Length: 451
Image (cartoon, rainbow, N blue to C red; front, side, top):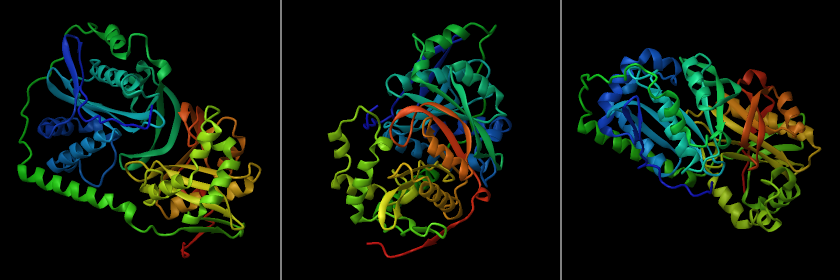
């Protein structure tokens, strides 16, 4: 894929027919509220155990203002090309939702999420909806890899993923807060190589159409009251007010960060400065073998990525820290020299999980890399309140794997055709740590003046 992200807000997929019933995927509407609330409240026992935890009770989580906000968030992210969220219509009725989230054009990846009305479940309609999404993802959207985190207790969904061609890659420790606790989730993934010759939709219909003695029905039910107009207006106003405030984040002066280690007094992790460009450029050039996306990039292209103007753009994009597009990036300084960077990025939607990447100018300086990684993890857990930090390590990077093990990270599995922080597509091992208890709490934070 390219960096261009066309709007996905008007995408409709289908129609497709299974068991004589027409299935369509379309954007959600405010008017869907009554059907959405009725089904979600009725199916609470089958949905809530695998849904994100909340201090609100189940009914409060399905109020009119919550649905309005969800529709607005979906529309905003879809217009930016970062999310494709659709309603599953079975025989013209609301029967669930399926979406691609965290769409990343630069890596050709996204995450798949799905829930289906219990009245039409186990009839193949969820699989058909997933097939339509997969054909779009690997076709018109040009994606290369899709993932799906699935609870080990959700056996039906795991079986469905396997039938679609997903494969289990890892067990992610304490990955997600569901049922009022952080719980392990399996990482399932599918890549472009798994696309069948005639597409997923045609294959699914061929396999499952006509297998039932009777087509499932979607019985009529009281729809409930629509959302009052005042609720829609208030929820919309609050959403866009929050958006305006969020747009001002890059303009705010970030709080400077300085992390030190008593055992390595020459080492400092600090906020990057405007005057770091020359040293940053030199360190990156010297470390090209570990940082560039592959042999296909020319010397001129690599050099162009390290211009002064590129440095300024990167600084501006990272001003909001962990919530910025590039995440939180700290300079690794040794005896006053720019020695590398530590980065926390891809913060999840609940602000509790993030990814990490650390690079140093000298390949043999493993003790510096180790100490810098420890400082970054201490800061992530103690100061930022993260619950889980993970890193993807290429199979031949034995030094990074040793550092990960020594700071308490656990190897959870192997991700296939994954694009790591360097931009290279390759198999990567997934390492993660989830608790502050495993950290030595060696970092001290101070706030010097930053030029």
